[in-house]
Image (tube, protein in one colour):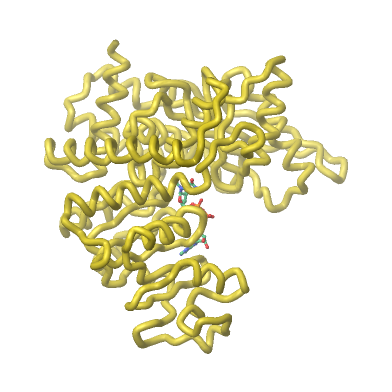
Length: 422
Ligand code: NAD
């Protein structure tokens, strides 16, 4: 697997070249401003002390306090955390929110920890990094395998050390603890705004536009439902166990009910829970594998699951006319170039899925002001930001005759560099 930080720096170099970035600013942007590596001793339930390794990378705060999630995963590495903090800087700058880029992580398999061990790990991590975070310094949030409950423990530990309340130190908190309305659906809602703008640019009519969504989790599940409400024809859905294709359209709510009842998505064609053998494998409604879903003849493909899904191995078989990246990093750099050469526009992750961090920023803002906004208010503000960001990225890509991804990076780097020179 390629090194994510090397990939991130290649993207920086490309954008720097396009905008003829000042040499000194370019140098500064090649490293995070600060990286903490901490050892986290945790008293396990069996009485033994186990040491975990954690990181916090603070990439750049020209636009505002560092912002980015904390990931609990056995594959966390320093280079991954650094790359993710760079991409957070880009994402926040693309949507023009007053936040910089940060990211944290702990090398751990949280599924192997008891609730008590998880709480002790989370509190000890905060004890190791608390001096460099705070609502005016660095504002963490949930990421892979970290939850609102973990955010609540972290905030509590931070405030004990600080000696006063600072609810804006962390976002993604439970609603009762200062979380924002609309956070659950924010990423998908932002993605829908982006699809609407793309449709306007390309003259797509929702009722004549077919969509395949890979990964019906938090992001993909809501995205499918919201796009269907907009009139788009959802023809394929998948999760880790496989997917379903129906040329006549899929009702995501019905698909969800089948999943909730223990069925696989392919059972959708039969209307009830079934075995793998019972699922139709041909005809207008059929079971498809995860690989098949990516290669279906649809108008819009929405990868919403994992990174590295569209690669140089399968890119030639992609038949979608547009790709909207709701997952982080679903397209490898090689595949990205081939899609560009094939004339398939890709709305990049740093724009398409930025609705989540935007509403996280709203949560921070509400905490600072002591306010609580309604879900309707949150979505009005979110839409304005996403529509504006999409059009800025589109115009930048046209101005420099580059891809939307490069347009997004260029816009972001221009914005960050503009603040750094002042
Ligand atoms: P999630 O865990 O809720 O959902 C992931 C879904 O992908 C699950 O339904 C899972 O079954 C499915 N999946 C796993 N492997 C698959 C495969 N090989 N093929 C098809 N489906 C597969 O996660 P999420 O919060 O929805 O996040 C999804 C992606 O969006 C991730 O890349 C995440 O980094 C990104 N993202 C999420 C947010 C957010 O607010 N949740 C914000 C920005 C970006």
